[in-house]
Length: 251
Image (cartoon, rainbow, N blue to C red; front, top):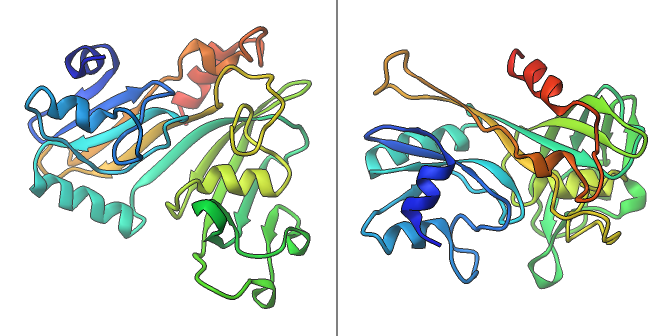
């Protein structure tokens, strides 16, 4: 596996300040104690990259790197201030989600460094399209307010395709939020033990950030999911993913 080949095959956008890739599932971004990652692969060819954000190894899709620290600081501050618009596509291994919803559940880190909801599962409440816990039910210890907004974009007999916006950017946030309200992401090794899926069906779909060095002063990046995203590995999840992606591209 070589950086130059990956960069050529999966390139989304590049200029003097940044490079964006459509990362395949199964490759780490950086610093996750894996055999290799994108930053290491680039470094082996004498290229220094600074991740602007991270997506999990099992997650495919858009990942943005800065080529210099000046660009990196300005971009990462937008994530810190929550002005970066992040959108993910996902497939749940369940049906029944509403057309839109908000998951407002705090996160904490439990045993073996595993992210969980910072309250007992039975205290999670639903009021219309909002999932939440009362402040009095939050467990003692460090917890992190976390909010995910979502829109259902396609329904099938056994699956739901969802567009999710993580307003906060906590580790494993979307995966934990969906699983704890009863809609685990299909193929998620943390929460879906069915063995039905060939991959985790979570994809970093779109990023919008300010980019003052560019004409138009904005980065608007989209990474199209590969064919494996809309199949279990043996059968299609939805009938016409091309139509769905075309519709989403106009949103």
